[in-house]
Amino acid sequence: MQRKVALITGASRGIGAATAVCAAQQGWNVVLSYQHNHAAAHRVVQAVEHHGGQALAVQADMADEAQLMALFAAVDAHFGQLDALVNNAGVVDVAQKVADYSVARLERMFRINTIGAFVCAREAVRRMSTAHGGRGGAIVNVSSIAARLGAPGQYVDYAAAKGALDVMTLGLAKEVAAEGIRVNAVRPGLIATDIHASGGQPDRVQRLAPHVPMQRGGSAHEVAQAIVWLMSDASPYTTGSLLDISGGNL
Image (cartoon, rainbow, N blue to C red; front, side):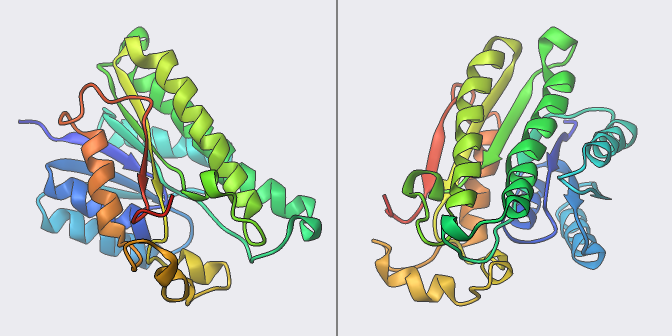
């Protein structure tokens, strides 16, 4: 059988990298975008190939529409098809209260976490929708449990950007349900990835794990398994769902 093709944004590390490997194990070819770390992206490509898949790494800034258009053009040129999009790329900033936010911080947060995801979803729909001559597919947005909890005193802007992604998931799912595209989101909770270090809290998972009902942080692989299930034919009647992967942190 011909392997399907998934585009996973921000896949040089963390949940994105784990999703690329998990997808390869389930028979997918993968295009992964990354922002800066070519060496890390190359390691993910090697891991995908180790599991029998083909992989292509493309550098693309989620805040730059032209670079995202080039990313999708690379998918077209290399594979000639797109069967799934995983909107995974995202950023946090240092923990601050809203009273201390700058407009520059807010613009960066929403341009990468929300607007970039919208642009990617737009381009995926143009390729996958049966109304546009496509053969259907799946979009999985990587949101956050913060969208429901609010992240007070730390990342209210990040939570708000992910909340917008949740609303996009619900609206787009209804918009393209009759065009062969399923749209869902996963909302990870406290997951052990290096995104916490980028926000100035490298010990965040260890520090907060006792407050999670399961008494531990989650792994990127645990989130990846859910994403690949939502991408796959194993979830044919699932769309418009927001799947919490939070260890019971409700």
